[in-house]
Image (cartoon, rainbow, N blue to C red; front, side, top):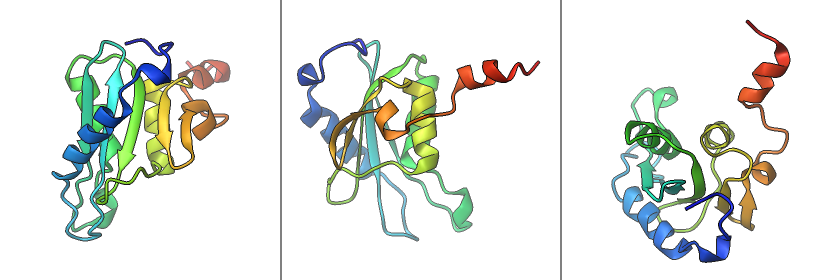
Length: 140
C-alpha cells in the first residue's frame, strides 16, 4: 500500500479494530486511560501499540512509542495510515510528543484519522521539525 493510495480504499474500520484490540492490552493502572493505536506500513503490514504506564509517571510509554518500535523491529518502512483510540474505542488525538514520532515515521503525507476527520500529518503537525531540518542547520 503506498502513501499515494486513496484514503477511500483503506479499510479504516479494520485498522480501527486493530487499534481497539491493541488497547485491550494496555497497562494503565494509574491513569485508567488505556490507549491503542494501529498503523499501515507502506509494504502492507499493520503495526500496533498500546500505552504502558509506570509508577514513576514520567517514564510511561505512549501507545505510539510501541507502534514505532514495532515498525522498526519488524522491518522498518514508512507509516501510510494511522488511528488512535481510547477505552470506548473512540478516535482520539495523539499528544504532541507522539505527533513528532508519527511525523518521523510517516512524514507529512501520513494519513491520520482524527477527531476532526481524515487529516495528513502536515495538517496535524504543521511546520514540523524533521530530518531535513537538521540538514538546513548544516550540523556536522
